[in-house]
Image (cartoon, rainbow, N blue to C red; front, top):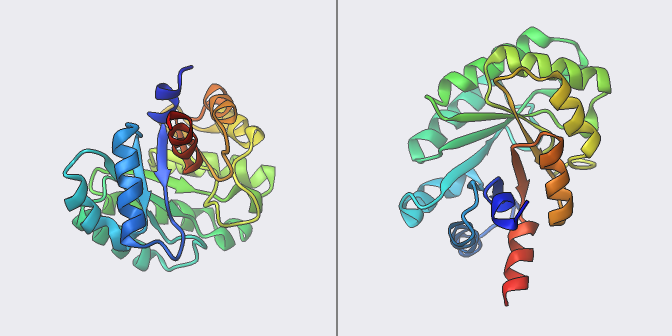
Length: 218
């Protein structure tokens, strides 16, 4: 697989709390130059980025991030606001406490509510695999499928660990045909990226691959 094919599956990401507009501009430029799938940025920067990018790159943002314990009403508002500001894709964090309580109906309903608020945009559901048991991960594959989301995503990158090959393989064996897989967090080189794709990931959330490509081209 060549690097352009891999980069075309990357959500080029900058979600640090200290992210400045200058830094967001830079990753927007890099995403456009390397033809990544999208640029994944904080909600506060969507409107500015939309004007700056003028349609060159899709804009992805995060909802209920990174802990997922916002109320459903807050997540719904965040999503509608993000869409109004120009977001093309939404990555939401589930309520992990509900998963631990086995309140799966609530999790499913919340995903449906956010999907509705996306108004046709792509919805990726972050389940934070490092905090779940294998049984819970399998259950979330089922719930994400039933709720009509477009993707299941491994991680925020802000918890105890990120994507693993084992989790992507597990997802591939348990999600419905309509659900794609996004691996995110800790993807550090092109060999890892290629293996995630081989195992079933359709998207990769990372900032390092574009940096590697830039370093090699200088």
